[in-house]
Length: 221
Ligand SMILES: Cc1ncc(CO)c(N)n1
Ligand SMILES: Cc1ncsc1CCO
Image 1 (spheres, rainbow, N blue to C red):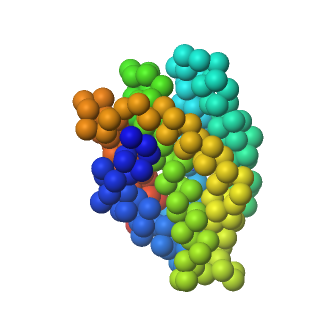
Image 2 (cartoon, rainbow, N blue to C red):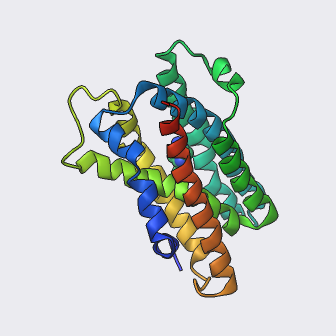
């Protein structure tokens, strides 16, 4: 199997994730500011836990080759992606330590601790099945928004978000990570018990992504 089999096995949830109203409002520049700010703060906290989960992949790896392949994502998360969130939130006068002191919302706790538990209880493949919806999904969303006819390109307040996730650095990082996941999945039959367990983990993380967008929208009520 490969990552596409995981996506195909939860197609409805996958589309609800990648085409969520939050994403469409971001593209059209109509997303309410309180929704965006709540999302950004929670995504900062998400990324901090998500970097820990990528670090767990180094611990869970059995070969040096797998340990080395896990490192660039840890680096990209800590030094690039989280930095972008800190600088966006700087526009609202928030510093990195303000962000670290924000309380985690329920959806943030649920998603990040689910990923960490799937990885701690399982092996490196279980861990990557839980990590994959995040990277593969945002890369797909970034590519979609970059070419969509109805994306607002002039004076869109969320243009920097679209640039980050459609940009070469993120796209290439995810392409490398996805190639690694496909290597790890290659020997596993999607219809085996093992394959179905991985589908379950991947689809649960995908449902958590839908809830994470909704958590942002709900902050404007
Ligand atoms: C919730 C979430 N999923 C995926 C990504 C992509 O890194 C992100 N920043 N946040
Ligand atoms: C930077 C980054 N963010 C989520 S995953 C990733 C590295 C590619 O897997």
